[in-house]
Image: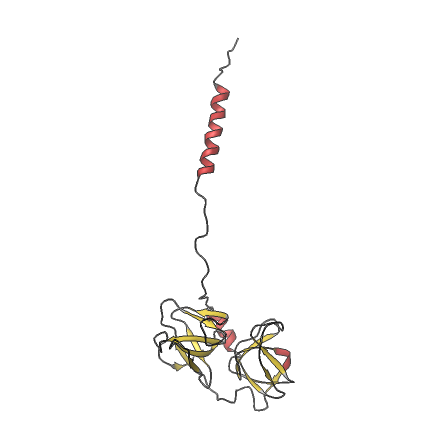
Length: 204
């Protein structure tokens, strides 16, 4: 008669227990990096946005300028009938950004072509650009304040397009803010008072 070892089952059970303990103690993979405020736009996205950036539109009626692409967001100001605005992006979800007479968003359906063509009253041409030189990049904010709502960001080496005419402000800490229209409409800090941006040049 074939004898069965009494140790076979306990040994097998011990192996399962060891395997389970090893599995439980094995290090797990986790995401250690978090997204930063300094998001950037790809060149193709910037090109698309610049197709309308700087063009002139007029209000079909009295409309509101909002801080976000939503009618429930805070209003910046009103635009009167036939008052002209300067576009700051290519539009999204029925909304389009403007850089003047105020920075914000309006509903695209409320705009019509300007009587004098698509160029803004402030002038025509390629516009003025500057390159971001600070290593960590720059955040784009809704207004000229470090506590203002975050719009986006620009990585070091990328280009921003200034408003026409150029707009700048200095805050209480001595930081200079410059208004831009691309890659997104908003304000960026040029430094104390400068140092974050390279020299001005004609946009391509």
